[in-house]
Length: 210
Image 1 (cartoon, rainbow, N blue to C red):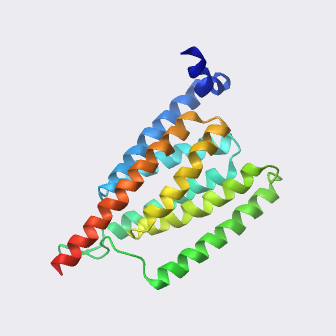
Image 2 (cartoon, one colour):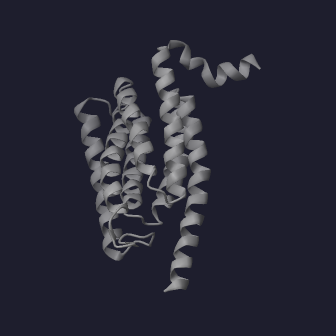
């Protein structure tokens, strides 16, 4: 039992207690945010903002620049998404759950490529482009940037990006030594799958009532 515990958590022996507590709090609020997103509830944004603010601090301290930028971007997009999700005309929601348009798909490609270039430049500027993790971190950053933008616009395809990014992040964060965050992304993967199915069901219901 001790060997298993050490395998998963021995890296925390060198961490400050406050950082461990903050990571756990951020993980809890991260789970809440993704769960509320699956439920298509507005609470996805305030809970997500708490989680991302904590992670921005921790990841900056741990010098994980790509991950830090992901969470800073999440916070900004949460403000944008909060505004988009609350727009109404009377009782009619102006931005219901829907599929991406051709224009939004083109924008997604632009966001993805632009993010790859931007994160690469940042890593090079700080002389951090030194290992395979930088490559993977750049890729996941681009994936999550697109996923967050699509979620803010209530597009079902956001879940596909979350699923792909979450699957990559599970072993990546474990390798980096952040077991709690790795477990968070493991849980996120399943919630994202059910989130996609729930939003797909919502779209089908909306089509039937048209």
